[in-house]
Amino acid sequence: MDTVSLSGKELAAAINADTKARTAALAADGPAPQLALIVANDDPASSWYVNSLRKAAERLGIGCDTVDLGADASVDALRAELAARSADPATDAIMLQTPLPAGVTLDDVSSSITSTKDVDGVSPLSLGLLASNLDGFVPATSEAVVELLKHHEIPLAGRHIAVVGRSNIVGKPLAQLLLAENATVTVCHSRTTDLPSVTAATDIVVAAAGRIGLVTGKHIREGAIVIDVGTNEAPDGKIVGDVDADSVRDKAAALSPVPGGVGPVTTALLMRHVVTAAENARRA
Amino acid sequence: MDTVSLSGKELAAAINADTKARTAALAADGPAPQLALIVANDDPASSWYVNSLRKAAERLGIGCDTVDLGADASVDALRAELAARSADPATDAIMLQTPLPAGVTLDDVSSSITSTKDVDGVSPLSLGLLASNLDGFVPATSEAVVELLKHHEIPLAGRHIAVVGRSNIVGKPLAQLLLAENATVTVCHSRTTDLPSVTAATDIVVAAAGRIGLVTGKHIREGAIVIDVGTNEAPDGKIVGDVDADSVRDKAAALSPVPGGVGPVTTALLMRHVVTAAENARRA
Image (cartoon, rainbow over all chains, first blue to last red; front, side, top):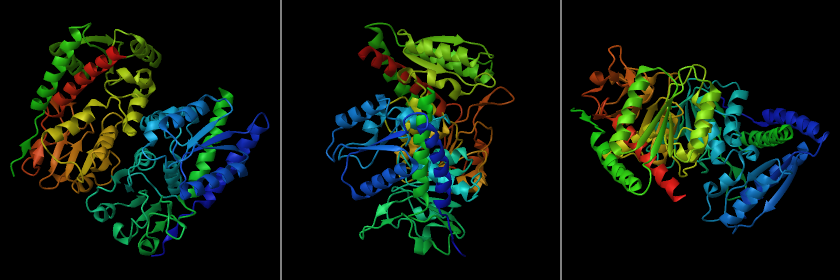
């Protein structure tokens, strides 16, 4: 079978057009929406991502202030910066970039981001609002997976979907979103016994484990849909996904490419969240 | 095969002995721990449960104040009561009983319960703390399932577990807890396509859908472990689970009974949460 490529470019462009118009409307009447991007690492994949976010913000008219606290920033320094930005009326939105310094977890610091500015939905309150089906910012990568599937008119209700990866900011929130879409959801991870047989029993496989080549043809049934959330740096410096595209091709009905699949939609949704946060702040 | 009965009575008794001692220690030095039980329904199964909670509290030396707001209480009246109890220094713990009045959802009101007193872990912040693996009160029924499995020395890491039911206070938090135990988790629900084949592919099936007889022998593989979370009122007034015990027996390796399985452990854990909330308040 011919594997359809589930590009995210068209969807991202549509979201960005809307965001640009909303940003312009805000800027006509006050300051442009302002994003604070907090970095505390010297990871190349992270720098690449931060750069792409800065460029995306610039293209849309969103102000972006990058704060580099250094790869040895302490929990206290991170919390203080996040709390200061949470209190700062000139900051509409806050994103904390991972990886964090050695020994610091996202959960050590994420509650210092106020939920109204938490545009990547990482704080405990944001995650709890999601678990309760209440309004709040949803982690953008998870939301991008669902939006990409919907954009390509892939029905989710009653489908069995395997999510490979159980991180607090991708796998677990994605499971919540897919359940809300009436999918049956299996969350797999590094401790799953016989991963290929578990994922091959499902209709849609979402690879979100952060491991190059983790999902192969062996992991999917004929005609499955495969979404690749991975953004890993290959030895040659290229950004590659979690799916071994060559072995999946011609068996999968559809596969999202890396780059150009989930990635641009994630960035577009983050920027949409920034302008939403700014709109909410103006109204408040 | 002989199906083992996974009783919760022994475990509940051990938890209760500890709670009783901790309650006595607090009461020797100040007021006894105090639980506010907020009711807004005239459902017989709920009355039965409220009664059993009151008796459990009494046996352990915990004060229990039942506030009946009536089956037509408004969202505002519920929020006001929960907020007042959250602010009241004489109240250590708050439990909001379901069902709620017609048109009112738990999510409409649960954020009015402060997380330090939210002993059944229903508020968005409590659910988010769970999703972030941070300290907070976990919904007692979900915790009871995990504790019951551990008490009976059933390994969870690497096992495939089906959770049937996706409520915000049982199915979804239970999935989080089981993932933290390194299980592979499939969440099924009323919209799952071919439920028997999905659940029969797993090692452990947890029935938490609130439907009498939903899980039958057809839904499990030979040798599976079955946990019955249901507490439904049968036409004859008896409390029965979600599992058709007769058809599961001799096929399942083990089955938790209703009553006497998850139920007593849930009550014991709730009471443990009450004394923990009181200890935390004294220390604060």
